[in-house]
Image: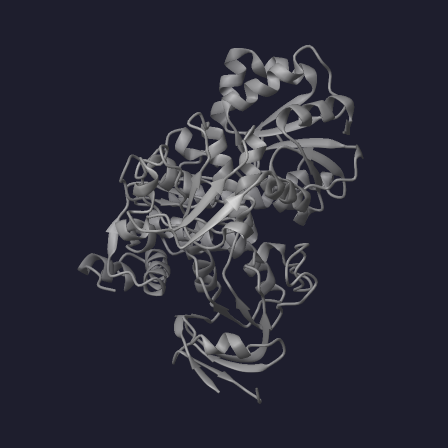
Length: 398
Length: 135
């Protein structure tokens, strides 16, 4: 890879060990994917995780004197204000992570849908977005350009202000190559998640979905990307008429023929649900929603479903500080709390603050939540939002 | 028998092959045992510790590959090397920062004879995989 003089200097340690480490990681990435040069970025989002590798790496950069030249937004960890009685080890970890990201110059937004609040790339903008549900949204819905960055790759890019130019940054790699014909009506948000969770049917490549209605919502597009990247690894998909680079089906494929065609029917969606949902029936002990973070529209849906009622089983909803503030201002927050719903800002479902739910059976709307929370021993029945709320009202699933 | 490949993360190691037909998410591998805990996965219940792992690619979120590999490495249960058919940036960054020798673009014949338990030497400095024993 050809580096400019400034990039060579960064690599050789002129600007400190931290910058040199960030550049070293990016050069290795560039070489792995055949990049010829580095290109500047204008935005970054780092999927902070508040776990050991995350802390270890960001502290290494900070100790080496690195500062972000492009201040990134960051993913949620856990809210130290909300979880006041946290076990000491988890509190210390969270405080250290917060300190390291503050020191490196990140914007501590703590939400996983940054493109909705304050970090929305424009069409054609070259950016470094980690968070596997954010990457496809940025490419496929906004038409900006990012590779499927890891949290560490995006952090390195935020430090150097550059990314190696390969993959989805280049026109020729952004065309669709797998045709996915959806031959069932997509009825609600859960159906979009199940579609994404059919990644083993879809296989490797850039999928182009047909059969998705014009009225597809922002939340449904977020969910599709989220579950494609739970069951697989997809930096981009096309929905003709939605994806800026794909006004038509022909444009999505760049005039070429698809490498393969995959048909998705109701049976596939049902099979996907059986694979991830614990179907034992009966009592549920909690509900955990908001993976990715719930939007104000989703909060409003929950508020309407619980209005004037009292839950048998508590519902926790992870959301952004922005959406929680909107809920507060509109009176939704009071309404939700009265029914027994907790809105938790700045927090991810995969954090030690939920360890007390380990071993219990819960209900969720979110496949990505059910998949990752397994590591903490949580088990989930997956239902659409109205059924999920009904389960929380009755204390059991049907 | 030797097979050419393209190095991604350099290093030279020897070990036993473990072949996965499914993409791997290292977060759903138990750091204490090195065993895959993802139900329905081709390697469910199998141990990756110290193996030369042959995998079609990585999958999953942009943070958990690194977190998963880091925790495995801290407990001494990380794979010794990765042989990846479709490398993605998340998997590659994680291998780079954890310094796990990784190769891709392996001669296609290798996949025909790669079986669990076969001894192999991965030379990610020279871009070579040496498979030991008979076919």
